[in-house]
Length: 292
Length: 258
Image (cartoon, rainbow over all chains, first blue to last red; front, top):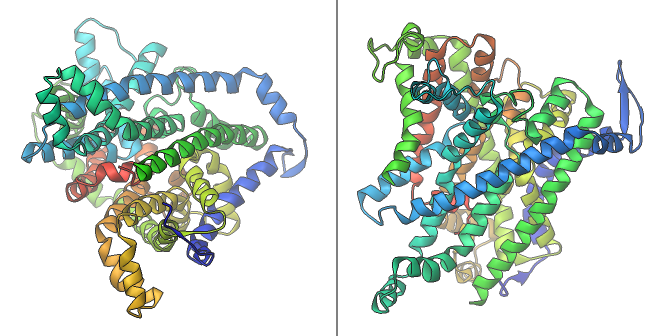
């Protein structure tokens, strides 16, 4: 990207985006910052509360519990989805009608509205009317995601794997397709094993897309809201209450704007930190590409 | 591979099947294929305004959002792909953070902001709110596509005496038409599937279908057939459009970076 010309007037082209996003991002953000330092009484009287909400949040278990669950969830998701996605991409047909059919079928879950995904699994897992619940109970496994915390986790994870593994697979597939066939021919001449081909040709070439896949999955699972909300409502108890669910409960359910705002800001800072890592890595990749 | 596809299809199959069953059959018997095939669930949705208006509302704000996002993202993406200017990297990063911001953080302030400017429960409010994540997305995807267009084309056009606006609309936009199509598709899709913000910002007049569905679940929790039918109807638009953009899906999801 060295050949870009410097042109300060390019700012005018960016201006509309800037104004629009400022309206929908900065103004709400400032409101949040404002609330996080204040307490309110009935009748919308606000007074300065300083850092008290932050202290309180950091002292109580609530934030830490939700954060712990969130991190556990995100790690499990990544550990399942990334290898599975690569595996699926490797076993996909390379061309022809079947490749198209696979692509379309795989993309389908990605584009179902989030709450419909929740609904599908809610119905699917129920013991009385769902296929999965029915089959499991016929097999003698008692499965009830509404009461058993472990079952609730299992179904939330199954749902997320169902929903998003295709994304990893599609990205990996696109990465695989970009490997020139000369590489494979060379490997054949060297009589490389299947594992060898994967380890020394495919994996290095997939590195870039995999970084994007990991980070996208991490971010999106980190702010997951709708699917578990519809599926389990955060329950049983607080077992599947992730950060977003907890936050919405606090902000819109109980109208505790002060602590909710403080919560939001800390949540956002975590996201910002990770985004920054994401961005740095991506810029580095782009730089590599331009260099090679 | 076959196993994986099976794993993907079975839950969808179950939903489709349920939408053709009557309620008594869903709750009573356990059947893999509907015994008495009925279209009653679909009839309920298509004749009851509180249901089908949900689809109309969704379509209105999703289309509005797509148009707004594209309109502002096109020039910006061009600027990012062609020029270096003061703060460009920081600005690009800042846009990215908006794509990554959890909508939950914005739910409450949006509610208050749009209430105070009296846009609450209008289509434009939801469309603007969805710009929060769709505009950055659009800029990113478009930038990826625009980088594929050689700079020489711009330069030649300028030498030939084209003004910027004329060049942009008559030469550049047709050249990245497929990129615009893909971007529009992704804006459409992400706005279509989003629930949290659209539910928070609407109550009656602009309520999207996705919100209608959740409320039905919590209110009655009984009418499973209609619920399934509504779910199937929300999947259909996505399924149709996927077919057209199947080659670009990975590129779009990777923010134009494959």
